[in-house]
Amino acid sequence: MRILILVVYYLPSAMSSAKLIDDLAREFHRLGHEVTVAAPDDTIDQDCQVTLEAGIKVVRIRTGEIKSASLWLRAWREVMLSPVIWRKGKSYFRQNPSDLIVYYSPTIFFGSLVARLKRLYGCSSYLVLRDIFPQWAVDAGVLRRGSLVHRFFEHKEKLNYDAATVVGVQSPANLDYFSEQVRSGKYRPEVLYNWATPSADEGSPGGCRVRLGLEGKIVFFYGGNIGVAQDMDNIIRLAEALRNDKEAYFLLVGKGSEVPRLRSAIAAKGLTNIAIHPPVGQNEYLAMLSEFDVGLVSLDRSLGTHNFPGKILSYMDRSKPVLASINPGNDLKGLLEKHNAGLVCFNGEDKAFEMLARQLLADPTLRSRLGRNARIMLEDCFSVRMAAAQILSHVVGETH
Image 1 (spheres, helix red, strand yellow):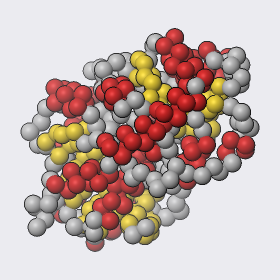
Image 2 (cartoon, rainbow, N blue to C red):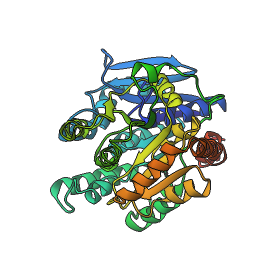
Image 3 (spheres, rainbow, N blue to C red):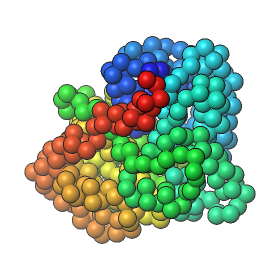
């Protein structure tokens, strides 16, 4: 079967969605399918670049930078993704039909492109929904409900959903929310858990700790998007609470709309136990994670949707204990506690967050035990083989 995957970030990006999609593409390829991944790229010097990487065709379409752009420039560039990708890649798409389209959200702006390609190919589509936008932006106070901009984004969101044959949300709580808030007879929603391909080993040290001057530190590591929904002020408050503990250090690796403001806040508070590092390639990211001690998760407490951050898969893969401060009602709390793979509190419970951090800081045996359990949790609950089989189960009858 010929499978086309659409995603905003692909390797060598260190965004968690890039690794997630690469794992899925490799599993489809392992099963004998012909796989193409199409993604925007701001680093290439031609409109459309096609390469073969590990048996997977990768189609990169030249666009402007998205993740580090200002909020409204990023929004505009995402709005234009479908027309730009079609205009610059239509020769490839017309000459290379697909039997299944898998597309990933965020973004909500692939809808018109997927609808066009479905008509062209007469095929099914599967939306991997990992971000219910614009609802989270309303919850976080970024957008005003009912405003012109909000209604525009809601329209694009509906087009994105309506282009899907099946919509896979990431948790039971999200399925309940999605089924209550978003009603359409054009697609079937279901739970599709995040996935990963467990590494054969836990990685070897790459000298990151020495290079960054972090010898003797217990490093709390965050990797991924640094935006409004993550409420990284939450992490800064934690670093401030532990500023007098000489062992504790917080390293945030990534980019996003909040980076300039957060750097200013760190400087204004005079904090020397926290730093924001620019994004790195996937191999360096995993090397860094292998060397450090605790994986951090932060989500804005006002979010009504229940995000399961993709970055947690890398933490589990490298046997790192998870320290999470999340929105109330999020399934992640029960899951981590059930598997004894991390310590969790709700965002806003700053004293509890500090107490949990201090437990991990003081107890290497606890860190080791939680980390081992995190790896077991990855292997038991988040298999890429199960995810691929679930997606393919919806089209196998149509293609044979």
